[in-house]
Image (tube, rainbow, N blue to C red; front, side, top):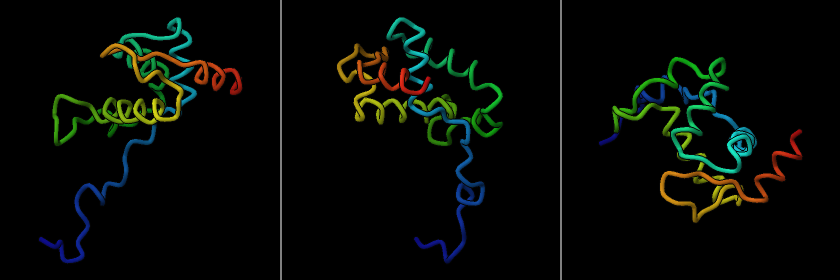
Length: 111
């Protein structure tokens, strides 16, 4: 069904999530956690660091999964991108994020 030129509610609100950390922030966090950590621990540390950057909309639940906050969902997608880019290990155990040597180099080059 066409929307007859109307913007969807999601489109009118804009992208919303403006506080997404870049790959170096995630990698930096993993280095602090001795190279890896459970997803919950990584996300908690990043959330504390990004407290001033995250916006109200970032804490809203997803319409498709009300138990998942928008910023956490974006973090999961960021992880996939970082694995693809070689910054995080693809073969980490489920629920664990681990940095690669390339990820460590990324952190060092940003300092």
